[in-house]
Amino acid sequence: MILLATWAKLLSVKVAAALFQMRWSTVAAAVKQAVEYGLVHRDDRDVIFLGIDEFSRQKGHLYHTQVYDLLGRRLLWSGEGREGDVLRAFFAQWGPERTGRILGICCDIWAPYADVIRECALHAILVFDKFHVIRHLLETVNKVRKQETRERKATNPELLRDSKYLWLKNPWNLTPRQKERLGRLEKPNLKINRAYLLKESFRRFWDYQSKGWAKRFLTKWFWWATHSRLKPLRDFAWMLRRHEKNVLSYIDLPIDNGAVEAMNNNAKAVSHRAHGFRTGKWFSTILLHCLGDLPMPTFVHKFS
Image 1: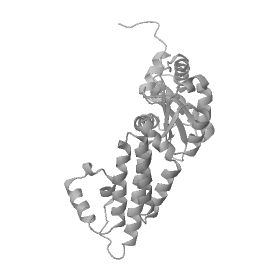
Image 2 (image 1 turned 120 degrees about the horizontal axis):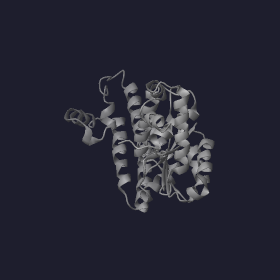
Image 3 (image 1 turned 30 degrees about the horizontal axis):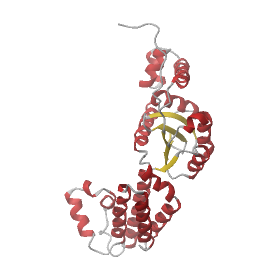
Image 4 (image 1 turned 180 degrees about the vertical axis):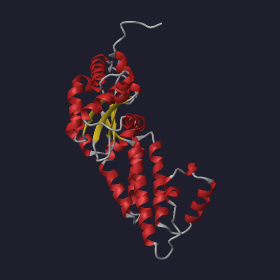
């Protein structure tokens, strides 16, 4: 059974079953036994930082809530859905003793998650993910570009054609040709240029080491954005203002979900090789098996 479970980490259950000429259910039973054993015997005393994210297991918005150990880079828990009650089930299973050891939790700006974290992990610092904030800002800049492109369609349709990544890429990642074109577009009084300059100025926030200075910068940037005469930037600025406390938490505890994104890509690979899963419970089980770094029972015999 251990051998079957080991192969099921590398191959889909269907392929592993065919390889050993066994039923799918036999390999699945081996996986379930391995996961049950691993959850009982894993050492989680060093888990102090959690990364929480949602993951879509297939088309149709079938979401899973994923809870990762940020330092150990392993999956701790997976549950179908992204409602608050789903994450609450994790904390109920994790228990007050282990939850009390958590120092920081990083997640997206998603109210159901944030509310449950504040309710269940009272002593942990809640940090809204840096890369999620940046993604929101990039989407905001792109909205400005789209609006201005539509406005100039009648008078100058070529001006902003194919310019999307000029405004979204980091300046040091631009090709010489892109830099040259961006320099030309910075001269006219374009709305997208104002949005671009605000995006680039916001980059400074992540470098602050003093929370007081970081808060002063956010206040100043909020004024710039709300007086930019760009509605998408105003909306983004007000979103930051509403969640300022947990955005500023990054200065005290600079953790992010960059590793979580990488682990979610591994979860996608698990899903793709099996061409999807029929039930959320089985999907959670196979993810824990492949991504949980769970201890496995030892072989009775050793092979030399």
